[in-house]
Image (tube, rainbow, N blue to C red; front, side):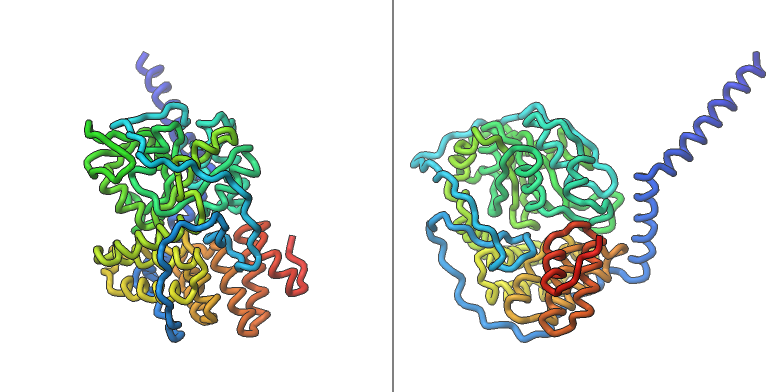
Amino acid sequence: MRKTLQFLLIVIIVIAIWAGILFLLSSENLNWRISTLLAEIQYAINPPEQAVFVPVSQPVSSPTAPVIVIPTPTATIALHTPTSEAEQPSAPTIPAPTATLIPTPLPARASLDGVLHQFQMWNNCGPANLAMALSYWGWKGDQRATASFLKPNDRDKNVMPYEMEAFVEQEAGLEASVRAAGDLAMIKALVSAGFPVIVEKGFEGEGFDGWMGHYQVITGYDDGGSASSLAMTSDAGQFTAQDSYKGPDFMVPYDSFQSDWRAFNNTYMVIYPLERRQQVLDILGFQAYDNYNHRSALQKAEMETAQLSGRDLFFSLFNQGTSLVAIQDYSAAATAYDAAFANYGALADEVRPWRMMWYQTGPYFAYYFTGRYQDVINLATQTLEGMSEPILEESFYWRARAYLAIGEAESAQEDLETCLKAHPGFDPCIQELLKMGIEPPE
């Protein structure tokens, strides 16, 4: 009997060992372990938080920021899309939101069922969160399907909101709206009306080296019993988030939510079927119009700049630049980004959000379209060199355009071809190569 038990124990131990080996050798875990090891080595040798971008070009004089007005529904450039303003497609005509004079009262709490939680695979936050949000509307895929469209190279470090929006409209048969200048009341209004909301925000957690970007799907809120309306409410409540890293039904207090959300200009995305478009427009109100939305974000950032300090001040200055780029005031945007980077340099190393340029490309627009090509090159170079794996198609793209502007075609070609290795099929890089008379690599 004892020998039988010993034999069974040995079998169990052997099976456990082999299971562990297979787990470690699985492609996803192997990718994660290799990536983590490379990052630790790279960051130990060249601590990215110690690098500070210092512009070398003279700041361009900045005109007075435009006053917020109710605009006509004409489109501005799409901030994240790395093309010039002359290359932007025209925006589709959308119905006007229905104006209401009296805000509709909101319930003190709301919760949505039907979002299928998914823990993100390695380096797969954006695809996982998009798949979760789509599941609410009956979409049957998972994060592998969204990832194959959003990031053909699984080592790509970021997925932009405009890429997620494109998947929704081209692949899922639904519609999406990406807005900035969000607030607690807007998120609650959408959730209480039956629309989960994807938010882009900052994230710091155990197992990560410093600040990084993150997505969450908001499916509920609770004001703690207080009354609520479309006006901004107290910070006492909390949101319910489907978090691809921390788990399902993760509770996020309003105050920490707002602080983390600021890092991305309070950006959010709502997905909806065509037949519910008007309902979404009515909730968004004038925020449904690009010009109004971008100017609202600018006003919000300017107000916060006068009130905040430290890292929050950096984010608000950066948001000013982002919103100014969106309304094509590149001179003022460049000045705002200069101020943001100067503030960044004054922060302690341990709180610097050194991954910021992994997720946002506004400074490239601002510096490029004010003729500050060397600043584009230097910023892109610092961003890429500060990564354990230099895989950011947008940085390669903008550095290539700056190289072309100063006559360094060979360097531009190298960057454009590297861009397509980082993100196969990335159309802006393909188009630049074609303009140069070069056939893009397969």
